[in-house]
Length: 130
Picture (cartoon, rainbow, N blue to C red):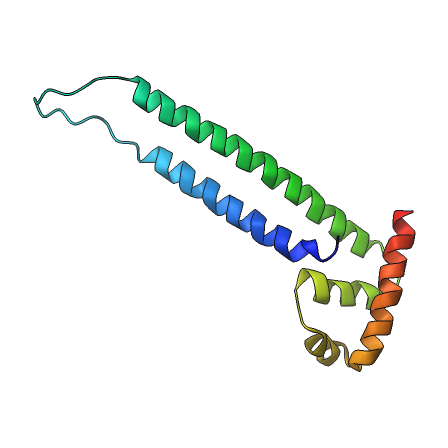
């Protein structure tokens, strides 16, 4: 579950960008041009576009809400750990996506010790889920 955090956050950003783009597109729907030339005044075309956009927006908003709920659960699980080293390590690894070497530099530990600390942190998280 922790490993999904970064991907969920990226997908949330992507979905939000899609929603923003859809809203921008909807705001720029133009009026028909009055050229005097024969053309169809079928209003169903615009109605169909609006319905399609509403379906897409609803689908994206549902997925966005679900992903945000899952990322919040992960954040709460990390925040609930007693050991600040565990919280820091899990945030660096799963929320920030840092590599082990970077985390070792930031925390002033050897990478080998981080593996031990990481195992402890995962056990602590698993213990809270039970």
